[in-house]
Structure formats: structure tokens, C-alpha cells
Image 1 (cartoon, rainbow, N blue to C red):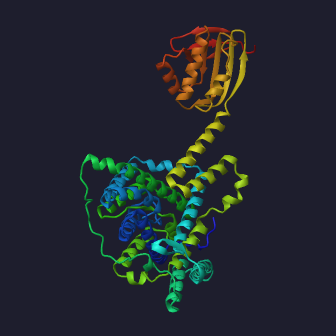
Image 2: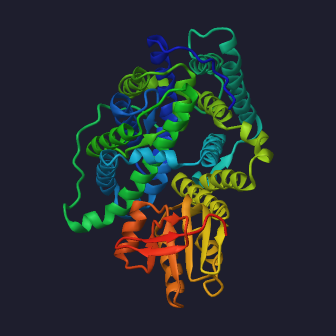
Image 3: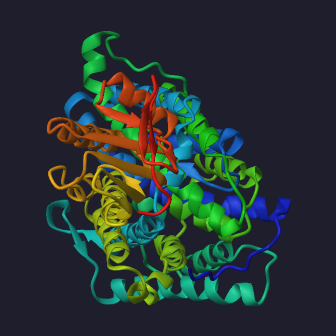
Length: 518
């Protein structure tokens, strides 16, 4: 991964300054996502403050930034359009309760089941999504308010300012590390635009960010089953998408900082934050990969950085709106473009030809689905495809070796896992009509992994029993033995092979005696 920001040890100055940088970058994002969800800009700004502050204090990943996100906003569109904003606030509260439940059940640990190609696809897909989301700032209202692409001098000024911002961020760390490079870039570009009275888009052209303190607000909805039937599907999706994006971002920040966050604590922190956010009339939120990257790469390592970002954002809303609204959008777009460059896993392109075809396919699949649908569907699709590929490959690893063969007895050694992906091959190994009266299968180098494997053993034993023959199993696990006994399967488990050829029945198993060499 490219990294244009110099890594440094955590200190108070870096945490505070990186928090200020993040706060400036949060404003246009929160406003934009508010418009996407169909709510007022302050609904998104207050969500960024409340969710950002609570997760910074009680979340599981110091240095990670949370707030209103596009992944959640697109889920909210239909709910707000059909039922109104009050139902959204109620849905956010229920979303938080679901996330708290997930944390209490310690479900966050299952993020470790996400394969690495899925993580690469997630990172690359989100980088592309961030890039595409910034392109809207290159549009201006046209005929009847329809947005149209900039052209002429306006477009070239925008491009020049964005490019200048990116260059400043690239070169400043080579000169000084006293102040985060993105913050210097924002200040310099703002000073140039204001000082030379350059005509370009500013934050105030999106919406006003002035407001007071967020007020406690109970959702004005009927407290009945009908309301619950309306909001719970949206709340469930919002909770899943929010936790998935947060835990994936947590894993990414872990990798960058070479530290380890607490996934279950993050679930609890996100849940508490969204419950409070819903009761203060906001749209809720989750972790933001773009702002988290800005924070981490600007030196923000501890909880103070997230707390500072939330407090600076609130101060901007309360007292600094007139100054924040003068910041050129080009400066913020340039910062986000550098986030795109540093977030995208460029090494994945170089190693694509060295990866297996299945892993390469999963990487591209997750990236594409993230761009064209949403993160939750993309990760789910990637995990499912990876699991199916793994099952297919593992199913081919099962092998059967003939250890002993006599007219009355055959002993086979099984290697490899017996599960749903290998049962067909397992059953095809045996031919009851050609085998002798007694067949022993040794599971010393094999393991029955699931119900399908047990059902395969049961089916095979019945095939032998129906033609008057007997199947015996050796080195079978205790759990498998218990299951086969409960199913009254016609099979003897854990047989003992002895040096002389004789069969001694017992109440638990059948003891087989066999000459040493046949």
C-alpha cells in the first residue's frame, strides 16, 4: 500500500492536529451523505459528532474515526422517503440495540473468518467508491437545478487546486513532520483562494454548517408492533452494514499501525453510539475508512485524536461555521484523493498473476460488487465464493489406501477430511458387492467434519448391511461414535486388529484378529 504520510510515534500534538484535519474533512462528507439519505445537513453533522465522540471514547480501535457514511445512507433512502425522518431516528435506535447485542454475544471475533483476498477487494473497492464520491464536486447546478460537469476556466481552476493540494501533501512530510500535511494543504489552498479571490466552490456552496448543540429528541412514532414491523428490516441491514464496515476498517487500521483492536468492544461502542445518536435526532453512523486513513496517516494513534475530531467538528458547527464555509472544496477533494491513493492496495495488481485464479477472482469480485452495490453484499459474496472454492479443493484431498486384503477382510486407510464436499468421492471408493464380508475403515489420518460426513458413513454401512456384510470403523472420534450409536447405524466402531485371524464380538465393538502378513 502506498503511504505518502510519514509514520511517527503517538503524541498529544499529533493527535490534536490530526483531529482538526479530520474534522475539516468530515464536514463535506457528512453534508453529502445527509443529502443522499434525504435529511437536513445538520442531521448528518450531529451524527458525525455523537458517533465519532462515543466510539472514540468507548470503541475498540483507538485512532479509528466514525461518523455518517454513504454505506448507511443508501439504506436509509427508502425508509425516509416512505415513512419520514422520525422513523429513521427510531430505526437508528434499534440498529444500535442490535449492535450492542452482537457485541455481548461476542460476534465480532468472526471478522477473522474473512479471507485475505476479500480484504484486498474491500480496500480496493472502497478506494474506488471514495474516488467516485468526490467527482460530484466537479459538477455545478445547470438548467432547472440539474447538476452538470464543470467546463472551461472553472474546471481548470478546480483541477489546479486539487492537484496543488495533492502535491503539498506529498512533499510536506519530506520537509517537516511538525504539522500534519493534509492540514497544511487545507490552510495553504484556503489562503490562496481567499487572498487572490479565486472563484471556486466552497463549503458554503453545499449547505450551511451553522447550528447549536444537538438536542435530545424522542422519535415521534407510535410505539406498537406496526412501527416495529416497518423499521426492523432497515435496522437489521443498517446494523450488519455498519458492523461489517467498522470491523473491516478496524482490521485495516490494525494492519497499518501494527497493533490490535478489540472487535467485540467495537461492536458495543458502535451500538451505544447509535442508540444515543437516534435519541438525539441524527442518522447514526459507523467507521469511515477515508477519515480513519487521514487520521492514522496524519499521526493520530490514540483515542485523543478521535475525541479531538468530534470536538473540533462541534466547535465548527457552533462558532466556526463562517470560516469553515470559506474552505475550498478543492482542498478537501485533494485530501480525499490522496486517501484514495494511499488506501488502494496497489501491490494487489502486481501480485495478481502470482495468486491462484480463485483468489484473483474473489479480489476482483469483491471490488466490483463494492462499487456497484454495497459493502455488505460484496463481503458476503466474497466469503461465500471463497468458502465454496475451499470446499471444492478440500473435497479433492480425500484418499483411500488399501492396507490389508484377504478373502474375508479388507482394511482401508482414509486420509483427508470427510465433509459435504468430499462425501461423493468417499462413497465412490467402495463397492459392497465386490468387497469381502468384513470391511474396516481406519480414520487415523482423517476427520469427520460435519453432518454430511456422518450421513455418508451411515449410508455406506446400510449398503453393506443390506447384502449381509459388515462395516467396521477404527480411530473414530467420540462425538462420531455417539452419533452413530444414537442413529442405530449397522456399523462397529473402534475395532482392534490382532495378530490371528478370528473375530471376537463384544457388547461395545467387534474385535478383529488378523495375521501379520496376508
